[in-house]
Image 1 (tube, rainbow, N blue to C red):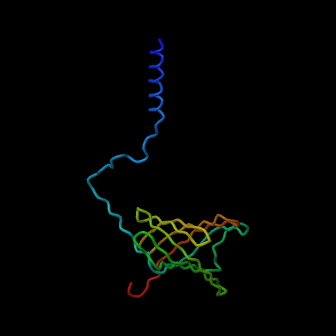
Image 2: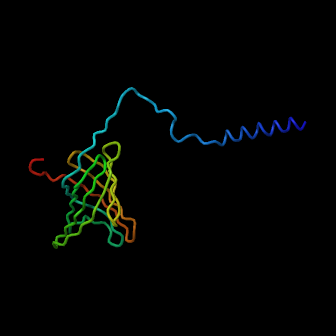
Length: 156
C-alpha cells in the first residue's frame, strides 16, 4: 500500500511539473518560407521641416503658430540616426535639442528620444515625408503631431 501511494505521489508530482512548465518564448527552430525579405533602410539624413499641432497641459490645444520646427538628421548608421531639432519662434528666439532615433525593422516606423525633453514615435510616409507623435510625460505634460517634409537641397 505504501508503494502504491508513493508511486501515485511521484506520478502526480511529475505531471504537476510538466503542467507548470512555461513554453519557450522563441521557437527552437525558425520557420523558413523559402523566400528572403530584405528591408530597405531609408536615408533620413538632411533637413526636414513642417507644422506641429498638439495639446499642452494648462494651455490646451494649439497649432504652435508662433514657431517653426526643423529636424536635422546629421548622422545615420544603418537604422540608427542622430541630429537635432530647432524651434524658431516668430520673435526670432531659437531653441535646440539633440535627438537620436531608430528606424524599425519594417523600414517605416520610427522611435526617437529628445535630450531631456521627451520622446517621439512615428512613421516614414515616403522618402520625403515623416509624421512623428511627440510625447512629454512630465509636468506639465504635452503631446503633439509633427508633419515633416524633407527640405529639398540642391544636388540631392
